[in-house]
Length: 243
Image 1 (tube, one colour):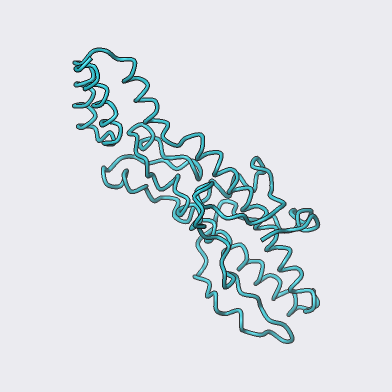
Image 2 (cartoon, rainbow, N blue to C red):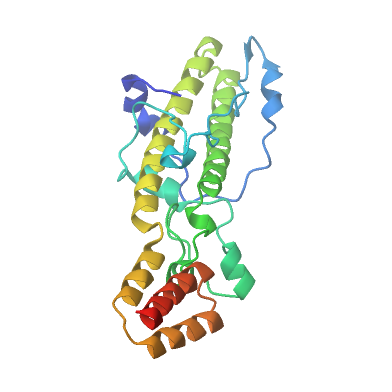
């Protein structure tokens, strides 16, 4: 969904977003958009074709294009959006499996243990995990906007004819912010993807001591270094033996 420049300029009026997140709101029923209030329809939060979903294209990890006027990746609202997640205490699956202390920094960056262990599928860098959190942030934000605008109409502070326009501006601002978050996610993902595997492979390639390589494989197995890393070191060990 694209937003025009006037939507972008209204960022300050719609910017109390995601800030850190308060207590979770009750689940929002996406089908309640058919409820009419006085002379206007309250729009649904999740549109029938939700733009916050993975695309079939492999380019850019299948992340959608939401707005032609994204907020900058350094905008404080974008930073808060990528730092936010639905469950702030949950560990990623590998850390939960091994009972490891887990730390979330922001979307697109694996947790430190997964980086060190070479885990390629930490949820914190997973596009589906990221989009799920964006949907949660979108629904919470637009739910608040919808409630506030409805009350403004009820209290004769806003003409019912302006409800759709004001709600549309809030929606456009959110998607501009979300596009900035997607752009930041791509930067994070590109910078950190396979960084441990590449580092271990470089260290192994510089080693000509088969004993040291063998000890690393043993140590790695005991400390749950990911098999993809151990395979790379084993390939180097085989090369040293056969050279």
